[in-house]
Image 1 (spheres, rainbow, N blue to C red):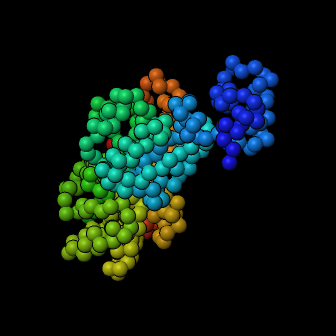
Image 2: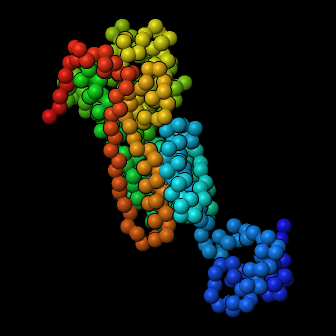
Image 3: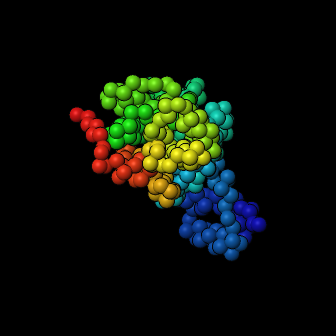
Length: 345
């Protein structure tokens, strides 16, 4: 494979001159520039990305740290990130922290040490975030998605998770349910806390007492949810409805209900959260809270790239709203004839 020295010999110039041509410097006369370009073409030389990044002090790469890259929730977000990044000529390095705060810290340390120009982080655990404060103080471009840190002035994209939890629970209450259980995600995940807050808000407004025994925690996966769902569905006064904090956990609830001989939605109403692609394809189709995932990903990538290319840009805060998508799993059509109306002024 030819290197920069081979190009210099072919063009009969110094390595420095080749480097200046490659980096678009204007202090090279046109005849010499053309000779270097012809040598590059003849030898089929490809500049080292590492070498160019050292010269430019820029990698043209962004880092994306997700909680769990295998979660289908992130598929459309990743599409949005990639479309914008490629439009601006940036490559992407992904890392999956698997809800492990120490692993997240390790990835941040690894990626920010000259390997990427900025970081996009989504799906966070609540904990010690002093190293993120250090990054912001140093001026390292950073975008946080769904993770507000008090007194940290950085780019933030938030989703109205509390509003989404409220919508889901209010819908079930509006169908006449009063024993509404909630399957929450990781206890130390901010999104879990916010969606639980929305669940509690809807109960309070409907005059339904909050019962800690009606709340169980899982790990945002179907497999992890089946055993905890079986437990809460086996109590003497079992819930008649369940709001799960993501669609994968809602599938776990449906699977557990079937194993216990319960039919969804006849015996148990279920609402999920995220509106992933499978939500409309499972049986029964899942009522869920929709998030504009592609738009979240594209806005996050655009914001990060703008920060990279203009480090004087002031941090921005954007919030995305959620909406309720009614399908069959909640039993809305079955209950329409004798529905108990729940209205909030």
